[in-house]
Length: 368
Image 1: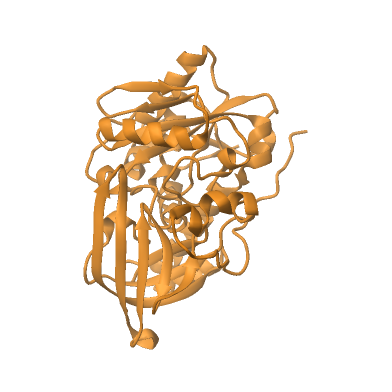
Image 2: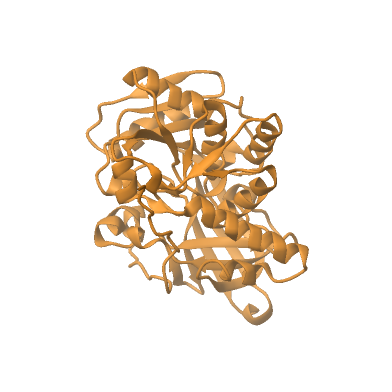
């Protein structure tokens, strides 16, 4: 069991900001809250999935809504745990563990807060290895975990439990409409999952991975070294572009932050331009009109001045940044998965163009 320390929270936030591909919500408020809970003496334990029994029952935890809303709407604090508790009450059964719904952005922090409130261990795994805009876009849903019951909880204390539903896509449609009605940013508890399902379908070691990734960037920034080199020391990563933001088109609609980003090249990219399309996350990066990185691979933006990752909600004119490409986890690149998370699933007439390598995944250590 990894018992989380206060000085490890910032590294998780930085690493999750990188793998979030601009989405998952800003980790800033969650980082402050989790640090405060640890200072109060609350305990957060992180454990490998191999320690679970196959019939142990747990629940995924994340947020739902537009990052542009989440950065402006202060949480009450216990929303994530209350969404889990709503399902426990619905089922009449206590959970044995929690799992991160997506390891990108603030959604990597919120399940740890839920674990602190509920006294449950959080598993070192998730079903994305990044962030995605829709709830059916993860390996649990792709490979057959039941999408109900699921619960939403808002900062005003309202809970709603949903199900049965006929598909994960229907759960997304209903949940998104309810999220808009509940203010545009809520806590989501989904799915109810067994230890056996988590071991089979999860992407393992991702909380450990974002911690290592964030620590490498923090060390590089502290020593005035290249943060991109720090990223590449932990995950397969390549520089895609260096430039300055010259235009941001961003709107919040239907529970998503949608738009596109225009970047004018600097240095060796002086005569070139990059466009990045956005739906909560950075989906496709075009260099002079040619796709150079496509979802599910990760497009991360690292600000020149701070050396830290940028979320879609933080984009503004004049920022100087480096665009980094990181390959997705292997479980997201099967034919079955690409039908749900590839470019065509988002309406683009573009084939998936994989970056070299795979996101590292920890070997599953089986209990006993």
